[in-house]
Image 1: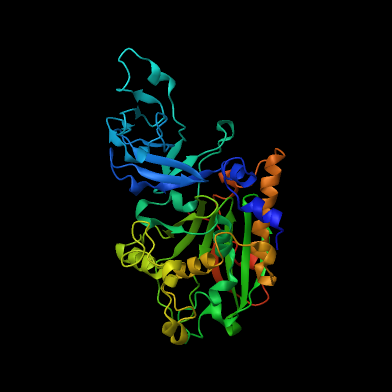
Image 2: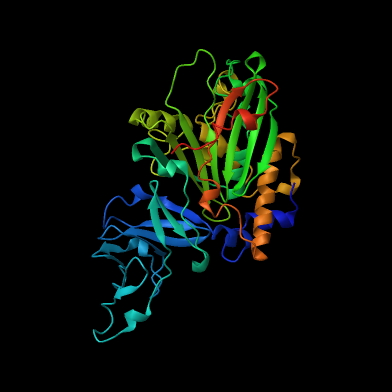
Length: 421
């Protein structure tokens, strides 16, 4: 439980706020590369940490990320013409290159050098893993680009999508690090007593802080099969690696996958959720059907969320079906991630955490909050935050396994927690 003052500190991400300053010390996903598919394609609005920006891919294939509003009369450059290696404002023709420099000002006399004195805020970008990453912090503190296992994999083995969530970034991450809820919220077959996550509804949590954030294990009694352990990784400021559920006797083989999310603050009240899945076996890439099934199971893709447009929202009660809830699934809400969105958005845009009553299975949530509070306060005191150095996390992954009773998960899962790529 946080105080009102702590809750305000840890949920505000705007310019000059403690967590806003913290977030700006990391590379942030700005958009998917395929949202700028070709040179001179239409620009895209981008909002991160409360800043209104516009992204475009110029004639040479380079991506620019600029403040959205033309400095002349503040018209939106989203309306601009993307042409001849620059983005030209449609109001008076002022044109800007990917560095933000004004390179043409046709509304001024030909002899004027006014354009040389006009430059928009522009943030550096790098494309990697199908994502356009940007750094919005002090130049002298720019860290190396993130180096996750899925970012090093072949393009055929990785898929990334993103979803708009109408909630503060912190409650979206809290949903991701809460392992107890899978036994309830994601119970999509009330008749299934065989699932490992539903044999023991009260997992024991163990959390270990690391140089990059923390790792944590949900430990469940799996009866005669042993002990069921789900080990997650959380890398600051918003990266999660989560395991797929372990197989039990009689299950058919599937493409082994490692999955995760990145929860990127748009502003204090909304978040971009980046969803990635990685086929860990190089010889068994993700097929279009595997991707389609994955997206459909999450409540995204064809017939669900398409082009970053939500179909299930508060306005239609997240498409809850009370008859399905009564007879088939725990929630009656279709799609795993839609179920997450529903409960998180139902709390309101920002959770009043001082009203909560937390239990033993909330240990990872408590740790997450403390890391953000510590990191934001330490940064104000000149102490660098965790997770800036990719070397601290590049070789880790999540794991999901059944181990013999009485053994330590740290020992039994040691090999499974090592990245392969």
